[in-house]
Image (cartoon, rainbow, N blue to C red; front, side, top):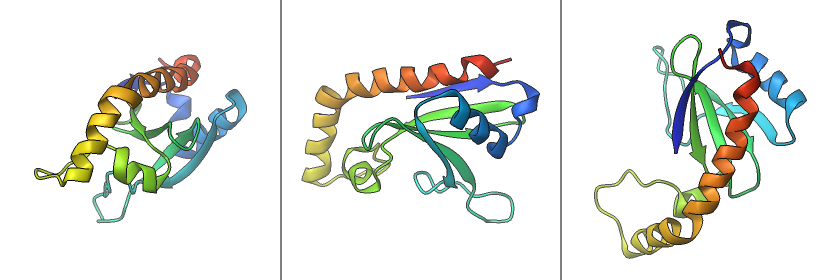
Length: 128
């Protein structure tokens, strides 16, 4: 699950967004390096993003796509659980990855969608 939103210009940095999130919601938020997708900037350095955690299994990664455009991506904040239940980019999967993928599709997907929508509501106050 992912979504693009346009935000007000006064929230144009990850630090300002993180301060807003810490004041306005009950979810845990932190600024971290993007080790989920390993995005890099023009200098080859790993880019940062905000991680919003509802629980160990439900979270959201937030980063700037353009100047005032945020991209919200659903993630599993626990890196071990993300390795098994996160989205796989591989063209060939082993049997464990296939089985956990099917479990995710049938059992986890509805809960993940609900959690994503709850976390997404936090940004309603700052959308342009």
